[in-house]
Amino acid sequence: MKNDQLKHNRDWNCDGAIQMENVMTLKRYHEIKEETYNVNLANYDCFFAFNREQLEEGLKRIGKTKDQIYKYGNGLFGTHDGFSRYMNYLERADERIKNECDPQEVYFYEFNNHECMIDSAGDTSAIELVIHIFGNDVLPTITRYNKLYSTEQLKLRQTKIKIEGLYFNDQPTIPPYVWFSNIDGKAYCHYDNALRPVYNALDDDKQFVAKDKSWWGMSATYKDGKLCEWHKD
Image 1 (cartoon, helix red, strand yellow):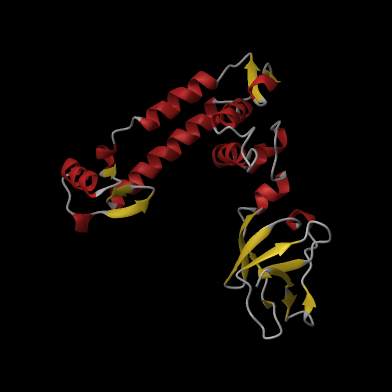
Image 2: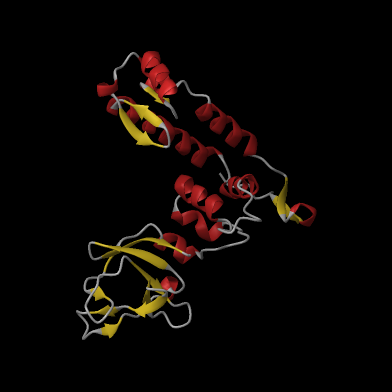
């Protein structure tokens, strides 16, 4: 849902926070998010625990033993079936936001909520949340501020690219990550307090160069012959 009447300005007395006018869907966004925050996890055989006492309390609450549950990260525990049902519930909530809320309003709200105006990562947390809910196709329509990643680089962050044969040092060593110069796109790996050129054994041992300029200035983990987990240092 798009709000064509939305207006905004930057409040420079508050580090450039965004003030909105003619907001139409933000109340609904808050309602849906509040619902997900207050959901009874016991209905999904799940619970959060951050110490032994909370773990024991959670097990008692859902009537399970330790060998019946799994740890899913960020303190979340539960059964496989319960976790799957919980994830489906969150996906349905995101779908409701996608259908009932304006992505620009969501972006501006989360920009302020995550303090993107002063975050060293720029608007990354806000825009990636918008992508998660609304998809990449909405990116060209979003007015953004304090950008760390371009639209093309945001899409790149979600991709794995197969590039075999990368190495550095005279005795070939596989780089754990690759950084691409933001000047000419040449590939390097930081090793022993210096940037070392990264070469491609499958291309006459030439220094690897990123032809796609969206790679320039980016780093990527190099794992199993693939570039992934793209980021800026």
